Image (cartoon, rainbow, N blue to C red; front, side, top):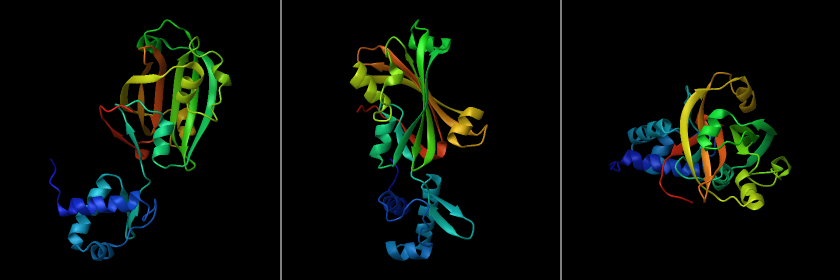
Length: 237
């Protein structure tokens, strides 16, 4: 167990100030001297606490300007199945979901094998998630066509993908087998996420199952690494 030292306590206090909006994203923090007076500690303690915050991505520094609050990251649990839309809304983010395309495709062989299905026809759904106008992730879903007939007619502008699967097709998704890796993005993904071609993105992919154990979706997410925090937990929602 990590010992709760004074610099860690200061670090946690500053996290609270950023998380609860006295200090907003992109806003400059008070100077070390001002923080030391505000929190009644030595400047050396403040300096150590600020270094901890930088290591965890809560703040960043500008040369000869000071420290600034970073954009708040979305906490994404890789062991728990949850709608990404629901996760972002719980974080209090202004979220916009943009459907790039919905089309019928041949389900790639590697995805057939992972889903343990012989279905060859599938719907491919590509969606961009934006937080306060910034594209942060590209979501690609493959669903066997026989499971979700007329999928392209569903109200994606009103509901999340998982909400549609529950309300319109009575599939209650229960668990997933996911893997996470880091890879360079191609031109198409770079254009959609407004990043440079070849930059590193976090890729999460795997099979999603319903309560009966049937494979419903092969899901892929390409996420900006500076906009998410990944944690693992055995808890279920």
